[in-house]
Image 1: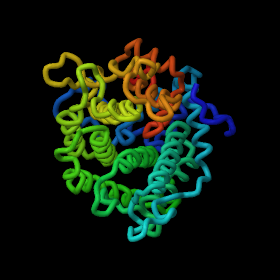
Image 2: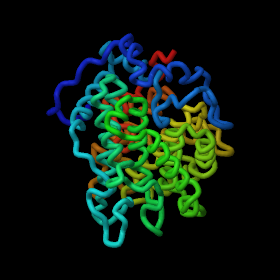
Image 3: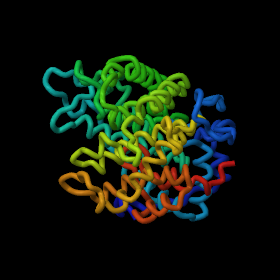
Amino acid sequence: MTDRGADAPPPRRAPRRRDLLRGGAALGVAGVLAGCGDGSEPTDSGAPTETRDDPAVYAGFLDGNEVVAIRDRVDDEEEPWRSGYDAQLRDAERALGATPSSVVDDGAPEGVDEHRFATGEERPDYEAAIETGTRVRDLGMAYVFTSETRYAREAIELLDHWFLAPDTRMYPSGRNFGETYFSIELHVTLPTLLYGAALVRDSPRWSAVEADREALREWVEAYLTDLEAGRGKKRYTGTVRNNIYAWWILARATAAAYLDDRDALSRAFDDWRERALDQIEPNGLLKHERQRVDGLEYSVYGLKALTLTAEIARHYGVDLYGHRLPGDDASALLRAFEGHREYVVDAGDWEWGTGENGYTEADRTAAGSVYELAHSRWDRPAFRRVVESIGRPLYERRVLGWTTLTHANRTELDLG
């Protein structure tokens, strides 16, 4: 079991399903249940399906039907969801009372506007984005699973400080590095912040903290426009399509899902199909990642970005999980998961690099969390053995958090 610390107050029991449905208005679940999905199988062609009257998924990573089904399992003390829930609530309790942080609070390099996301040797803005995104997501997750508005209020305060308050806001532009380039530091941190924002979007606490929900939407619109049509497109035209390219697509897909922008989602999914899989070899390994000093860690890192975009697509009726490369009889992602399976459990036979510190327990946990999604998609005993041998609950440190809570054993959930 992955331990995120035992010094927090014990988690409370999850409310019963009937209480969840009664509190649907506060959660934003009522609208979700009215149109979250039609039960049809996703396809690997065409645009995202038009099955909802309003955005019913949380930035593409989780939906309201799934929350209800998981809550039922938690309430009945069923594993692996219960242990994931307990871990999630402990993290949310830690996030309460956190001091807001933004790109402005840690200063800026000489000559750089303090409202820009800047990088440097110590990468303070990057660290601040990780910390704030993790807190917002944890608080948002606690909100949708408990209905307690205190979590939403604090998450909204953090979002307001990062995105909206005039004195501390970050500019809504991918050009936060001046005239250099788009950085993966933005691609791997902004999706977590937007996921957390989506989890609390329907909370009534926005007005209580004088934050503007519509202003945040406008921020995301400007950011997505810049990702798609600004220097980002030029930056990634004709380049090696490694994990950075995959994270760029994920950043676009997350922003588009937050906005429920079906056209932008279609463009991101098309780029994923046409270009993001270039590095998958016949054995399933990622050729641009395995050759690095930390080859195994970076391979999982790249696979994670590809998989998270497929997860967003699944919530919009598009099956990127099943997409096949020309001339192949197996899906590209399935081939990649099978190719890495033996190594993520035991790196002893990995013949490429594992970095200065080797393949650590943190690396194994990160890998196991991605296999939660693979197991839920394909329901293969071999993938279940991966997650169970590494040890549940599993934590995905980039975007999803306690993946065992939100993405484990999906085929066993009553999704209606």
